[in-house]
Image (cartoon, rainbow, N blue to C red; front, side, top):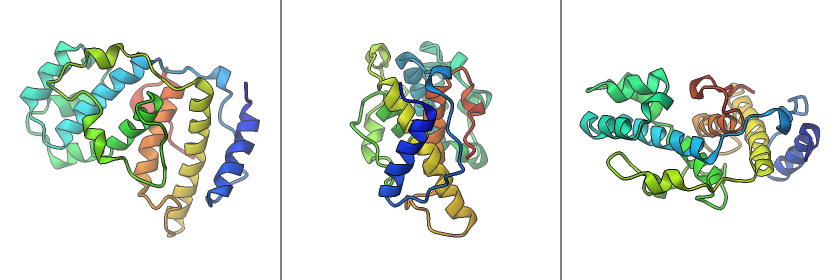
Amino acid sequence: MITAKQLKADTETFLRACGYPINPHLPPIEELAALHLASSLDVRRRCLILASTCARAYGAKYDRVVPWIDVHELRKWCTQDEVALIDERSPTEFQKSPFRWLPESLWEFAWVLKMIPEIDHFTPCSEQLVHMFPKPGEDPTAFLSARDIQDSELLYREADRIYRIHWAVRDASLKGRKSPTGQEACVTECRLRAINWVMQSDILWDEVDVST
């Protein structure tokens, strides 16, 4: 099993070769053995919730989303903010705005669940994402019963990679420079939240640490 120190060195070598700035003082992440990895079912439930909140944020009607959430017993896995959006019959732009970047978290989860072969952090999520997850009104049974998920070491490497990419993106933003990914900072942050939650599923979704 790779150690956090070895992983840090591997990631820095990889990112340097890709042209990313490196912060040698950014510490290693936790050891893999200390983390609480989400199960495939955990991730799939979270995907359905994100798909639902995205749907509401982009205009899906209350009567389409709320019964679907309740029939499939997803409400107990939602955060307070997610429930507030889902249950609001006429959400305001202020309520919807924080959820409009969530497709990037779903794109990260698509890789976690082996739905896409790789993920490129220089590009935004594919337009095909909208067709990849069950939407409110569709039967999610087959999706929930699938068990595919990436190997724990691949997940660990991805978590360290996005952690260090996120530092580079934030550093560029603070210094008024172009993002090294060419993407807005929210893209990387949403993917970081997703992979960090997979690695620390004992932490609530809205309490995941995305600081670097």
